Image (cartoon, rainbow, N blue to C red; front, side, top):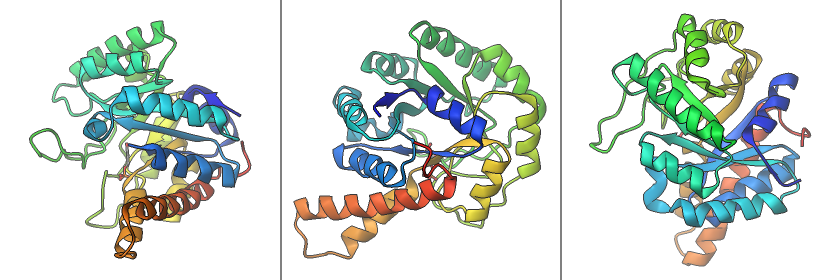
Length: 279
Ligand code: 13P
C-alpha cells in the first residue's frame, strides 16, 4: 500500500468517522511492531518520533528506515514528527523527510507566541508540501529539559477557529482532559468541549495521551470528532512487562519478545479506534 501522508490518512478517517493510531518508534523493532499490527487489522497507521526521543535515535537513521518499512507495508502508513519545540529541530525534520510535523507551542506562556510561531512553521512546511499539527490548550504531563512537568490547560472552543485561521495548521491537538504518561487518577474527558471545538473547525482533531483511557473514552472521543489518537506509554509498558516476564532471555530474544508485546498492544488500540478493515 505504501507511504501515505497523514493528511491523506486522516481525510478518510474524518469522512468515515473512525480513529487512526499514532505511535512513536525509536528503532526498527518498534516500527515493525506497529506496522505488522496495522497489517493484522488491515488498518491505516501513523508512526514517527519526537524531539524528546532524539537521544534514542537520530532522524537521519530512523526516517529512511521508517519510510522503507512504510513502502513495503500492506496498509497505508504515514511518517509524522510528534511534539517538537525548537525551530532548528523542525527544520532538520523537514530535511529528514517526515510527511508531516508537529510544532508544539502549547507550553508557551503567551498565547500570541504560540500563534506566531505556529504560523511561521506552517508557512515553511507548506512551502515544502508538509502538513503541520499544532496544539491549542496544553495536554500536560510532558517534562521539559529541566525535568519540570507541564500542567494541563483545557482548549477553549472559542479560540479554536481563530487559532486555525491565523496559523494555517492542518491538524489540531486539543486538550479535553487527557494527559501524557501514566494517570494518577481516572481521567474524565470533556466530550461536550470536544464537540464544541469540532463544530467550530474543519481540520482533523488529535487526542494526545491515549494510554490508560477506557474503551468508552476512545469511543466517545472518536464519535465526538477525534480522528487521530496518540499512544506511547501503554506500548512501552507492554514491552517492559515482556522483558520482566523473561528474566533469562538474552538481548536478541528480548528484542523479539518486546516486539511481540508491542504488536499485541497496538492491535488492541487499532481495533478500539475503529480503523480495522479500512486499509
Ligand atoms: P501517552 O504516552 O500518554 O500514550 O501519550 C502519547 C502521546 O500523546 C504522544 O504524543
